[in-house]
Image 1 (cartoon, rainbow, N blue to C red):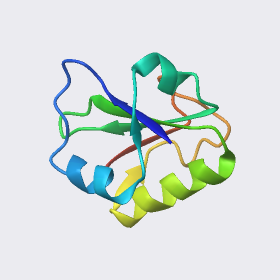
Image 2 (image 1 turned 30 degrees about the vertical axis):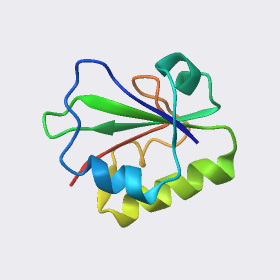
Image 3 (image 1 turned 180 degrees about the horizontal axis):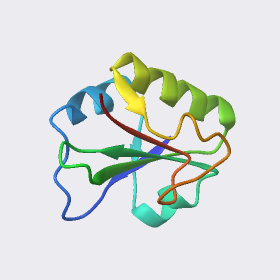
Length: 94
């Protein structure tokens, strides 16, 4: 899976846990957005600071499970098939 931090947006305090639990390859935002599935992660201020891209549904599902294990909540989970802010899932602290 590919990931990027959004320029000028402060990472969340729990970002080290995300980077430690997921196998992520750092790249630029355009390459992450070109992936079939895109996950956004919000910081404590509510801004998306990290994007994670997955090419396969299995990889996307694995990433979602890992983020849920970190007790993050997908705010789009009730809106299946809907994207928001260019993301298929957006995780934040509960």
